[in-house]
Length: 242
Image (tube, rainbow, N blue to C red; front, side):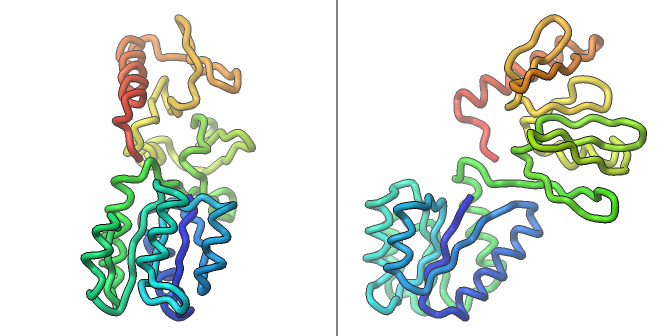
């Protein structure tokens, strides 16, 4: 996910960037941020970059944030806008443009966090991650990159398309990291599969999109397959939002 910070005061952008970075750390999400102090440069970037969210100052040097917001909506109707300003003067106009929020400077971190929480509820999906200790270093792993996880010789193994991350910890300590994400299903002892990565199944295994096979626990087979069917149905009907 990419968002843009558009404000002709670099100091205000720095404060906003620090708040967003704090939010990412506290909520285990990954957001790529681009910063602009020139509105024309930002509009040019929209031809090559898709922004999910724009923080937009209302008082810019060459154009008002209101007029800039109209141009953003013309170029990308799905892009959400949060206005930042020194005054409440344009609040009514902002909300007529269906702005997601209106932050009056100097706003507190809690105000920014509330705005991002609101955005997360309507966004199709945030880029969430978990952080694992691998050897002496900590590694961030995007939730969407995880195909499945298993446990071997006291190590959690997180399988992605590009690598396997191994972290020395018990499965009981690890599993709560993924338990809040509905796409993960424990298909057999100490193994959790990302159901978005399942292609099909047969009498014994889930067959993944990369061709690997993961066994389905016999004792819980009916319950596991029902959970998978429910997830596929809910996802197809647009009910699962992360």
